[in-house]
Length: 570
Image (cartoon, rainbow, N blue to C red; front, side):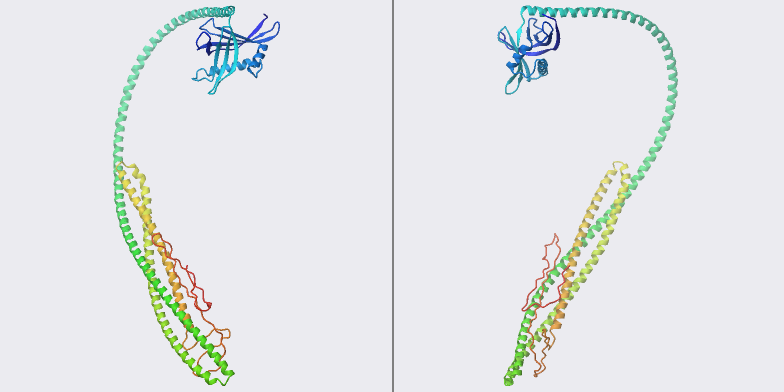
């Protein structure tokens, strides 16, 4: 065989599961060695040598020699995807994975050495998963013959001899070096012992002198320390007395301040109770005024109903009067045309005049009823004026109460500022002052509650103001309606004169029995809308919501005449 160069690729012990025909399955640690042999003569080729050995069993030897031709058949049989040049490194990678997984309970990559007979054995690299065991590579190894085992043992013995000779030479050289070093160290030790004896003598003399000097310095320092201690003690006692006096002053000041704050708090509680009593009185007054207002509203509704009934009667009488006027005009035209029927028409006219006198008497009675209605409306307006005066008085009381509330708010804010300034001094006092802090916190909580009650009372006062304003608007509107109705009644109902509105504009005035200058007037009927207001009151959570103001025109008989528009409530 020609010369060859050997390149060791891998040599590590690995756990292998061995399955032999005549023995049971067992795990053993096997030394796997991979070498790449490069053969130069007669042909330049490369050969991969895989060797399995066991240090505990010197006769355990399995080898595989794989050249390029053998690898091609292995590649075709097992479906490998690498070339011969890359195969050794891939095989080393698989062995490294087995080495990494060897300490796990369930390793993913394991090695199996299976032998069915004594002629050959197969080394399998298996990947385990829950589904199946996947064999990545299977190599057929040949067990070593006697000559191979002897050669392997001879190589091992030669290697051990070489190691022994190298170790023996190293031992001899190291022994000579150590003997030389020991002789040098003994000489140096004798010299150092002499120096040490000399230094010990010098050191004892120096320590004696230094200890004497140190004892003298210690006595002097002790005397100084005693003097300083006495002076510091006197100073400490003096400062302690000053601090105690200052602390007592601060405690007395805080106690006096606490008494003052308790007095102020008592005054504030008294004022709070008084204010609550006044608020209750104002509420009762307001409820009584609301009841009176509701009663007056009902009376006003009843009066309006009576007024509408009177208006309807008045319009019916006006219609009859207009019919009579048309009949008189027809008779006048007949008198002009026919002189022969004058006597008969005059008799008819006399009867008509009698009916007219009857109607005039009825109209006088209606006017008397209207005068009575005006008197009742005047009395009602006087009562409304009185109610306005009471409301104004209540508004004045509410303004005065507002001023008192502002004063109380200013006092409470000043107290809170003073308390904030004194918090720093109170924190420096002892644990006894903690109780004072708790009392102050309670007072602040009470002041906060007082402020909240004041805010609620101010809100209620604002709501009562709005209610009063709406009531005033309703009263003003009612007064205006009453005055308008009075003026319209005075203008339209005059004693002994009837004006008939028309485009021609002629009037009919009876003056005794003589009838002359009659013209045909245009027939018209006067209609006037009347409105029924219901006041709007703002919603309050503690009162039931009152109905809003709605104006509903009540249509009388005949067309509605143009009148002044009703002002809306604000």
